[in-house]
Structure formats: C-alpha cells, structure tokens
Length: 426
Ligand code: AMP
Ligand code: GLY
Image (tube, rainbow, N blue to C red; front, side, top):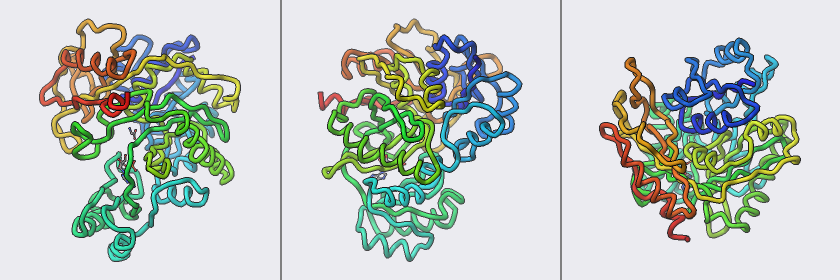
C-alpha cells in the first residue's frame, strides 16, 4: 500500500523512514517533505503544502493512498482528518474537535479543570487591566500564553510587572501573534523537570510510547530563549515506573475518557508535556501530534511495525498488540541556523552529509531542500537532527557529538550538552 505523510520537518522524515520499513508499504509519499525524504529509498516528495487539504485529498485519491499520517498541528486543527474521513479516506490523527486541546490553550485549561487533570492555576483574559489584576493575584514570575497556535513561540515567562504589561499589550493587540494572541492564558509558574509523555490513542484505548525528554531552550544549560526543541532523547530516566503510572492515571486516562465523554473521542498521537513538580506531575501543554524532535529518537528505538500500530488504532484494536523497543538510548542533537529562533538566513549548502556514517547514527532532515543544482541547502531554522544510539545515554551523546562534527553549513549552531539531565541522573 502507499502511505502519505503530511508535513516536511524532522518529525515527518522520521515517521516516513519508519513507515517505509513496513512490509505492508510499497511507497511513502511526503507532502511537501524535505531534502532528506527526497533522497530516502521508497520515498517520494510531492509538492503539496501540509495546509492544502483539498490538494492533499486530490493527491491521496489520484495516487490511491491507503493511509495518510499527519505530522503537524495546523492541518489537524483545520480538520484534515474530518475532511479525509468524509471523502472516504483513511487518515490518522484527531478530528478538529479533539485537536482543540492544542489549538486553544484556553480550551485545554478549561477541559483540564472540568476533568480534574492536574495543571498550573490559571485564568483567561482579553483585556490588559483585567490581566494585570489577575497577575497581582497569582504573583510573579508568571507565564503568559497566547491562546491559539503560535508555532511554539506563544509562551512568555515574565519576571516583572512592566514586562507583564508590555507582553499582555503585545499579545492582546494582535501585534505579536495575530488572532492567536487575542485571548491570553495567564498561568502560575511551575518549578521542576519537564518530560514528554506520548501515547498512541484510539478513543479510550491507548499504548504508551517510550519515554522521552526534549531541550526547549536554545543554549547550553537549558538557558536562553524557548525554541521548538534543540534536542531530545529516549528513554527519559526521570520517568520511572511510579511516575509513569501517575502520569497514566492522572493525565492520560482522564484526558482520553474526558474527550470521549465530551463527544470528541481522540484517535492519533497524544503528547502531554508535563512538569514533574514536588507535588506530582502537572500538564504544561497538550500536543495532538508527535513531538519534534522527540519523534526522531523514539522512531529509532521502535522495533514494532508502525503501520500495524496505526491500523490497530484506527480499528480500535490497540488491546491486541504490544510495542517492542530497542533497549538502547537514542539521542538527537538539532543543528540550527544562526539567528534561530529569531530570523535566520536560508539557502546555505550543507556539507558532509555523504560521509561514511556508522549504522548507529542517523540524520533526519528538517529545514532542508534541494536547490536547482541538486545540492542540499538550508531552508528553515531547525535544519537537521543528528541522531545516535548508544548502550547508555552517555554513549549515545558521545556518538552523536563525535559524528555531528562531519556536518556543517554557514552559521550553523547546536547545543553541546543534549542529554545532560539524564547523564546527571545515571
Ligand atoms: P508550552 O508550549 O505551553 O509547553 O510552553 C512552552 C514551554 O514554556 C514549556 O515547555 C515550559 O518550559 C515553559 N512553561 C510553560 N508553562 C509553564 C508554567 N506554567 N510554568 C513554568 N514553565 C512553563
Ligand atoms: N518538542 C516539543 C513539541 O513538539 O512541541
């Protein structure tokens, strides 16, 4: 069967790579894909954007695609799954109703309070003075979040009153994030270590994926501005059996039950970003899709057939299978373009991609494309995720940094300490 993967980042390269390994698959189409998916065996890029739902339906029909897997949140929020289903096409991901868990932070917070899911204390405002009053009530530092989708940039932690007022004005006026910022969630600042808990869900059923953690800050030591993610690894030793059970019982189960009870049953990958606080896990955010860059190390460790897993989820038969994982640790270091997460240049040729890498190293592309001469050039902020497997997290880290030095482009940068928290723990 042919599979269509929607999206063109590192997550989609990793999903397509794993899907292409299934015996059930003849070819994986990626729309729009990147230079990495363009050069993998059994894959083909198609020039349709991830948000062109009509174009994607036409593509799935004309290519007789048997299954579509959606990577990014924007098409999910826009109802791609509902549209594919109405067209009689199989598509894996939540419908627009359930996708509100990610597309509206106000919805997600209200959902969590209604279903007793632990999360930071909060309020929702659309007025600066009302917001300042609430901030006085909760106290500084405080977290301000644009309600709608803002490509991972809509969250600001403020330390002072002046900063709070300026940020609120910026968001609520529509200057900073357009419509997405016209409502703002004001949240208590939580202290702790973060973990990504990802499950594959089918209504009330689910299977947990291997644990993982990402590094959201740009600079070493988890400092500097927030990014989409500068690296990740799996497993995350901080998520021991007790925490795993707590997160399942206090977060995953009530979320899936609550959505099903609210007539918005969830099928797809559900990602809970949790803060492990002194008083237990609390949800920072939900994503209604796989994490990026968490997907890259998790796919490297998944031994089971991903197509079979998705088919079981679509059929409501997740109780019939178990997932098998590589015992090793996988670690991904993101190589980014100078300036990211702010503005950055594009079009720089990437060298070293054809070096002779060992089997336990894998490069997943993100912001790359082929130029007119067929050279791989940069086309985004997060350019690629350099991944390695190792018997321990220390070894995976050493492998990644040993080999990443082969790769380069103008103004490239990456963090030199991905995995440090896991190494400290071990
Ligand atoms: P979000 O997109 O909601 O996950 O927020 C992005 C990042 O901001 C999170 O990964 C955290 O590092 C940080 N963050 C979000 N909410 C809070 C909070 N209530 N307390 C502390 N840090 C937070
Ligand atoms: N790595 C965080 C995310 O995918 O949103």
